[in-house]
Image (tube, rainbow, N blue to C red; front, side, top):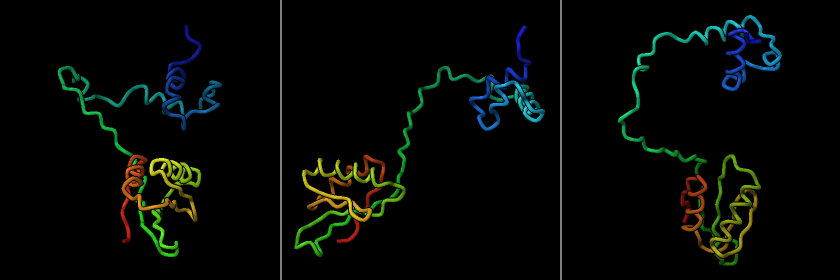
Length: 150
């Protein structure tokens, strides 16, 4: 009736859920005895389920939880030293972020603040005291900004 055995059919159906256990040999129909036993065991189930008779009818809808990805702490520093008295806001201590994303963030900060800026030595420098605006941008990007220094 069907070209595959029960275990092979189950293995093919589950291949997207268990990619580590499947591979080219499975697609070709060559199941090893270990894989065959595993899929046969899985097809039999794990016994009684105490919650199988419960349904979600009549329950209020659950709260949609969108957990923000915490990308780590970044320091926002106001500096004037060595800049001819001009104030510069520096964002430092990025962890796990590459240069292209720093440049994208710097461009967004420049546009929002209406000032110039650059990326130097892995830090973003924005002209002027724009700590509050920069903190909002970093929070929206998933970072945890901390005002450091003076």
